[in-house]
Image (cartoon, rainbow, N blue to C red; front, side, top):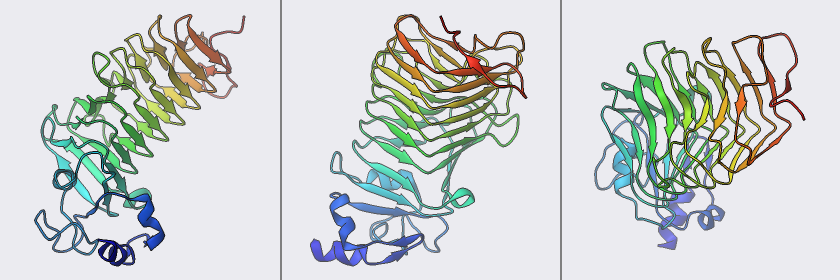
Length: 307
């Protein structure tokens, strides 16, 4: 096994060179996915080599073993379409799906064909990183439906190319405490449709969720970050939010009885007159230096107002 891994890691792949030193970081199996590679195929004998990768992420997930640290590298330029509910089901615990490539070369997962098309997170401790998720249908209910603990999404973009191609909710937690410890870090949510509810919605009683260093811009009829359920130990820090909905005045909304910290966020809305209502939390949330503005070309003020 050591000899095979050494040979694998010494192969050049797009974006860099693997070395033997990397083996310690990947105790499990390593798979490659790349639709742009000629001859890529979802079949036995493929996936172990970037020159002969699997054709789809969904197939690669099915080759993984739970809780062994398996990693799926998605090659630059890969494109995959999800056409129905659970069309991409990440249901093997402990795996990581890591996109390779920068900006326009990031792997792209397109949700289309039906409003029910989504990516399901149905196993614990899964990571998704450096992938573009693109809407290709009107009023897609949810882009990523999280039904398990410990999901991390990092450095991903949620994109809507036109007003009629949109996600009502980009990331949805479980209705109960079925999705604790969601981490959303360094992601971009770019919305253009007028019907969207929220970028991140936590309807249940999840604990330990983190939303950090993300960018939100567009129409969110309820709030960009929404926690309708009474969550515990939530962290919402370092985010930049512009809600361009001219009927809503909320960027961060967390249920009254929740606990946690909301700190160092900069937010703004399209409604003039009161910049101190863009962040709405309960009395048990600790608020530290959050700044808000209600129109352009001016500095923000503390929101809620200092007392």
